[in-house]
Image 1 (cartoon, rainbow, N blue to C red):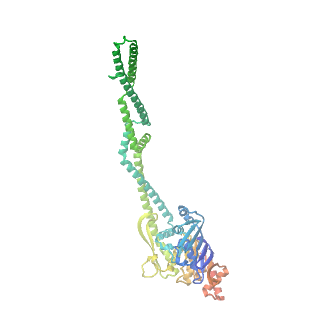
Image 2: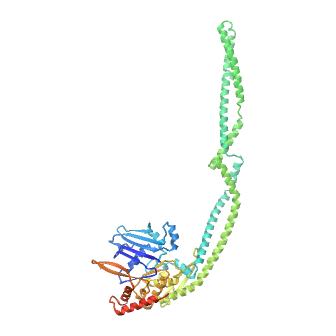
Image 3: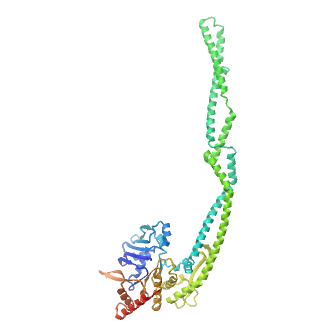
Length: 555
């Protein structure tokens, strides 16, 4: 079922209106200008139709609400757009003429109109002067043909195969690019490995070298100070020891003259001995602090090499060593990756062959069933008011995609001597609607659209043709919801649910009312459609007879 309930507030001549639709074939009847198309227009707005602001001039806010039965085929679409999916789909459209804006709510979430159109395109097909008419979209023709021929499974198999092929090709291209870069860098990677490994560097070695050099720098400082002290005190030409000895020499000849001078001499003599002893101690200490300059230079050189490697790799020493491990692993797996990539390339070639085979097989099947489909379509639509019908499926070849290698387009001619043309070239909305009705009656069980709406299907027909149209609608209505606006009793008698649209007046102000008719009211409405507003016994009897015939039809 398509739509279950429609509510309209403040739209055209409607103040407030609610319609509860039937599951099967719904028909709307009423006098010309009563507002029947307003019902269909409201449904169109709920499916994303662009607002005609001229209709809302001088109006306050308009609200249109609908509850639809949501088919499972829409679940993935809803999930992709983060819209809650439920068995029932609630759509509300608020139209604000003063600001020329409209707001759309789907299951309580506000969404753009463009998204509404995308999410609801599989809910309804509109047949009349509307862009929702799927038959005019040539991209749908192949699906119709495949549905008729039972080729959807083969088509899905092809689509699945193509996805697998594309995924594998994408993987291959990505891995091939990585391998190509790796091979281009192979010599450089080997150089990086050799550069580090030739020095046999160990983790933490830089810290150890820094510690050792720090200690050596302190030792050198001690040595410098010992050397300076020895020089001043003992070893220099004019050291403290030298001058004391000179003083002793000077006092030696006069020490016996005076007791005080002798005492000074003895003190200085003692100091000279102590200085000599101190000098020898300092000499011994200095000699024990000898530094191996070569060793320092070697350590500094090695630390410099390690720091340069760290800078080149933009990391610490641990990171450098980890990089080398990674590089070695990449080189080890290079041959294996190349082998796996060649295997993947072979798999892609096999998938290409399989894709070509499946696409060609599907194409052959399509061409085989197209002639049967053409005959069936002609058989179905000819009784719908066409004295002549020539219907063809035209194929064009294209690059293989999810639908195969074929592009299909429906061509038709309803006049002898006129070559078949694309359906979109047919001017009459009524003709297109009847052609669609014929095709849909063939595909009633396999088509995935939930509902069909026919607006102008009775234009230019009557009598036996109208009866055939009504029967076909009833047939389709057994599989999916059908909504039809009609002026013809021959169509209305086959409806499962019958609504009457009336224009009334309240306080000199017109308004529209929609009523679901009882059995008795249906008889009266059919009689009115046959004979006009003045009901007669004959027209009532005729209406009763027609309705009995309509109820008897078993399709």
